Length: 367
Image (cartoon, rainbow, N blue to C red):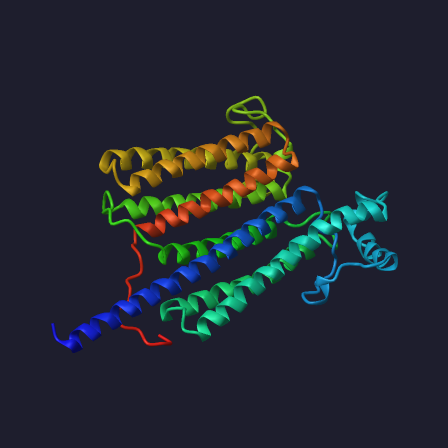
């Protein structure tokens, strides 16, 4: 082999190793972002379950980082809360000390959201400036950052729905807020999985990725239904299973007019559809597991199908327990966290069918 050829081969290997190291760094960064997003969703769930979401009645993206620091500031914040219908109609006997209990949940939720913006934006700038992010990923990552900023506006849009005529936030806006959080979470998971090593196992069938995508869609839809359930406080009623209101299919599910409004505003109908969504997801992941085990029993695809089914089964059991116990805080948070775990794994499983991004043979210092 000529000296020039050997030198070229060594340079290619060096560049490939460099790219592999860069990808590892980006994966670690995205993993930290995913963990922070998971914590944000959990704290958001606690904020909802403790009825704390309307405790901060103003949107101060910068100044709002600093909470009340003395008695006068707490009184000022409490007076703002006293102006809204939730206090006037539900919490009129609340004291300042009791107000602090709900304030801290909402403040923590907003603080974590701001923190995620920092831990996403600063490493992105650094990785981009030092050439560690491949060109194909740059604008998708900027898009995620922009969606995160938009999510902050969606959060305030949600809160504002409960400051004038309502005593809680709109279930439509709550669902939009949660689904947007899931889209950010899923996008980070997709990119992180794309940069991870992949198995060399062939897909069991040409339609395997379609099944994986369907599971993602069903999971996201089920999370949307869960948000409607939360927004309507529907989980605090009909706390029996498998029967609901004494029947497998309860009556009066289309009592509101027009009929379609029941699927969004009737607590009984929304909870029933959420149950049906869970049964559907369970059946689809069961069928997917059986198909995968029969077609390719010794592959990573089959093993992931088993894990997917196991996660959905565990999440379903948590959901039933949450319902039977009438949504205590711990079980409600387990159910919400479990939904995000199922969704994240479903995204990673779907992305696995498309293979790892190929390594470049020659890349410049700044791509």
